[in-house]
Amino acid sequence: LITVYKAYGQPEAEIIKGRLNVENIPVMLKYESLGNVYGLTIDGLGQVEVLVPSKYAEQAKEILGHDADMGPECLDATEPEQNPEL
Image (cartoon, rainbow, N blue to C red; front, top):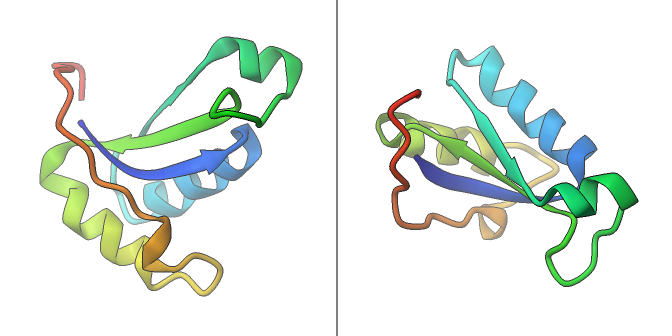
């Protein structure tokens, strides 16, 4: 899986997930549960990573890069993670 976006909070991540799902791109959200429980968004605690399978990464970045509210500077590709479920 590749991280294509880092959101600051669950609501923002769900919006991004929905945007990608409309384009038939499978999405997994990765977050620290403590930040979700307490609603914190400091020091990365409330940060939510939006992950897609590597074969969809470029398409997802292009879609998010063309979104009026989010520029390409929001996109952050990281090393692939091992997850056979997606």
